[in-house]
Length: 471
Image (cartoon, rainbow, N blue to C red):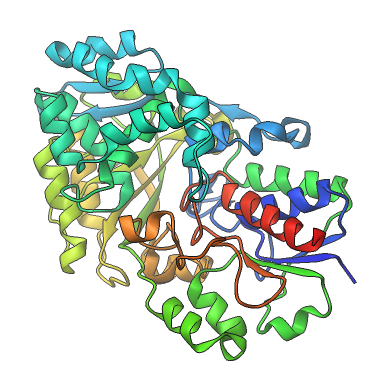
């Protein structure tokens, strides 16, 4: 008998278990897959010796997480790798804009917009640590109201509006659009600008690193630390009902609202159940991994300095791409998020070989193969790319959901990050982590602060569980 049982061994489930175990509770984690990781896992998806991240790959929120920064993960095998520049954004003229750690260095690729970019981000970067404390939390009285108000004033308009008001040139606007498109929202809607500002300030403040050896190393480090605290992890066990979990004093579920309905639907009050059924999932993703016989032959040499490359050029092109999934359509020129970890981490591929990872946004549950469109986008900025491909792996929304049931319809954020669902997900409650069932809590990215590998959903759910257990 454990004090607490956590269902799901993704970063949030493991984070919740670690927080509880650090308080002296006996904790058992139950995971359906045969390895921990969930959205932070790695595998040889193409050829032997080529290590690919199955889902998440680059982790600015991982290194900045207020929780992860307190854990001795380096002692358990986690080593962060950082490319010289966090992000490159190429254009059709053979040049690229760079997001650099130093705002002064970033200025060299932004031309006349360099000072405008500095004015936009300098106050936010100065407030990065207090901002993260407030932003990576549910609705609450802010601990740092001035910093949060400064961020909110910039983040209130949609990304397209903020870009046009604050920046003048195509390069700076395109660079910001690529950042904001991580929201998986149409860029003409709020809070898309908030995502662009947060990712930009993280790039300047802490970088966009990734784990040496693959995202699996982050999950394995969390699991190793949990075991050192006395926690237990059982893999290969799919929980079908809460009744299987015995008499644990607290149950924490790293599942989406759909998963909660499957586990406990008949025990939930009708009103709460109905609100879960109306929860909205966002666009899906179509993902490609490549084994390459050499590095990507970028036309813009600046792209070789960054582990992450955004493909889509202008604000207008990216905005059109991101508006399409909401209408149930597919962009002919999709905005592509690409990572080239093997340029900076030789453990990812055999000597002289390379890997690349990329995805684009598609309508939720789409069954259309986006391989050709995505590879045309890469070829557009890197002529000769296709000739480098030794093998590829393609994972559409259905395949991603099979890997991780929390990716409903391919939605990697656990639900649409709309204004109505950003801080009140999955439903508006004093504690969004609590359910009407005593001792049962949600700890997935379907709770605040939402998607991203940061563990803060698990942290806050564990705090709610500790308050319950202390009453």
